[in-house]
Amino acid sequence: MPRGLTLELNNEKDFIIKKTPWTRWLAAILPNRCLMCHQQIESSNRGVCSVCLHACRYQTPICLGCGVEIPVLMAFCGHCMASPPLIVISPCSYHQGLGHWIGQIKYQAQFAVIDVLVDALVQRILYLESLGFIQLPQVLIAVPLHKKRLQQRGFNQAWLIAQALAKRLDIPLIDNVLLRVIETQPQAGLSGKLRRKNLKGAFTLSTDFNWQRVALIDDVVTTGTTVDEIAKLLQQKHTQVQVWCLARAEAPGK
Image 1: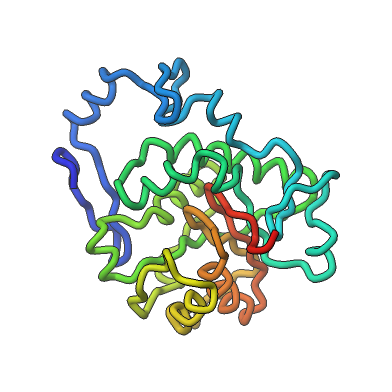
Image 2 (image 1 turned 90 degrees about the vertical axis):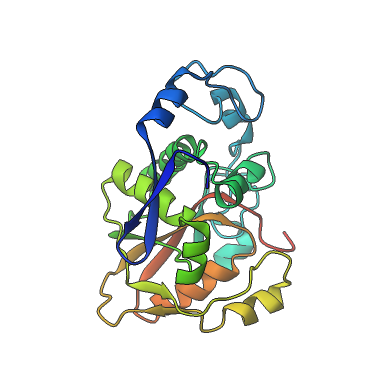
């Protein structure tokens, strides 16, 4: 944990990293440079400049199911229209420049990119809603960490992203209805089959869950195994589920 940062327990699930006064002062006087191009950022944004952000964002219509580019503005590609999959909304592809920096949120506690990418995600969400492709959810739920992993890492990056989204969209973020009850091994490096086996029974949903529309929040969606496993639980309650993340990979084989 970097010096000058303190941990505050936010109920039994989440930790929030807060800056002490001297680190806020230090951030104010240090040059605000883009992590990608290293140029000075002239706006109030931090982490990524507007030029790099624009270059990494989707430039063409994207299927909300599998993530592939489509030639016309539609919610799904022809293949996904036949059997609509779980909706995944993100402002950019995991493989188009920002994936590394989103990974740094989790592995290096590099939070500088969160606000600017959350803003980009909010813009995309509201745009898709204006097109009638999605309906805003009643509540947000962050993909949970197991309590041991949370204690080791000190924060849940999905919860931090969800908290920022909740504030911008004025949608409640609910805790302690979705729990990770099995401490699974890290998913990175596992095949799709092993990922599914690894996550089997890893999550549980409280019995008093009663919302009809939910957005599940994560930092990235790659194979989709984690969010698919959680969506199955929610759909047993006849809940409409969509996934919001900072970046996504195209579905395997696409």
